[in-house]
Length: 272
Image (cartoon, rainbow, N blue to C red; front, side, top):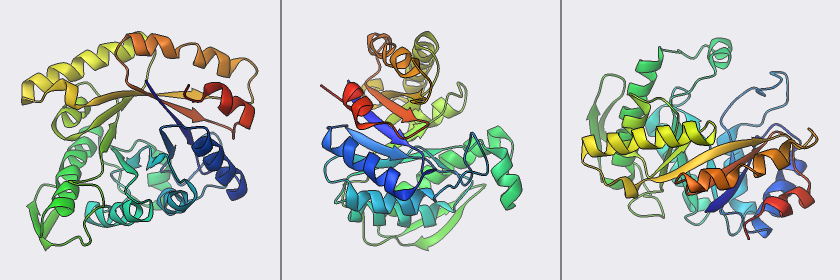
């Protein structure tokens, strides 16, 4: 099982950079941040922007893969996002994992004046955005006429370092539509929930793969687990649940830290 580490960019840059360096040295498979403009536990928290922070991560982290788990599809035009991702892929020497989701944090949208359509519309946007982005990454020119996005002979050069493109992770638990988008477009699914619920959704994803004619084994299955280092005993409780996910078919665990972990805690959860 792959073990990765994530820390929101809601702390002093020196703390974030120390986390990146420690996680890289300790052999975590990938290192992630998140794509929000406010701190989720406290909206007033200082929050560095996710993709510019990710570009910095690409120069500091030397071995691990890097990614933003996950970018909200509503926040940026997908053609712009495709170019941003290519830039980070080049900065990191071809170590970008590209994460995208339907977005969910309504207060950010309201405060910034970003439209926040109903869930079904956002998931439709997600499916269209992935078609746009993959087209720009792989084609000389891309034209697209969808309900939400339109391109005419659009170009994205240079192409990614990774061919045909960086692996795509889609995050979300929506059974009917989100997991259908995963089956159609993703290289990895990142879900949440206790082991039994995660396993149930994993089976739903298999059903969607069968419906679209996709080999289920082509999609890596992952889970995001949240760790609060400041809460006594909580990290141990979460770590103790990892084998249950592995038994249910999970290939990849992303440990998402709510406070910067000590080096000692990272050593305890690092891959063996």
